[in-house]
Image (cartoon, one colour):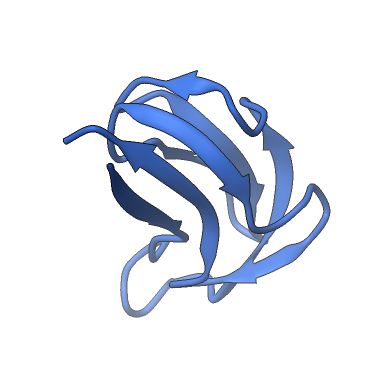
Length: 84
């Protein structure tokens, strides 16, 4: 089993980027099987709402943040496990 960290990506370009976002909604619960590309969590910035997709097919083993938490670019929001 491989462990994968799911991180908050940079949103926008270098001149018009958001450094922080608020976690607004989780699409899956811990223990759920998730397919690569599925929307995992939604976050909201001052400029936009966006979804962070699952980077791999596997199991969501841990949510590192909860809804309404504030996260920054590069923060780990979840841990997934995959057989790959």
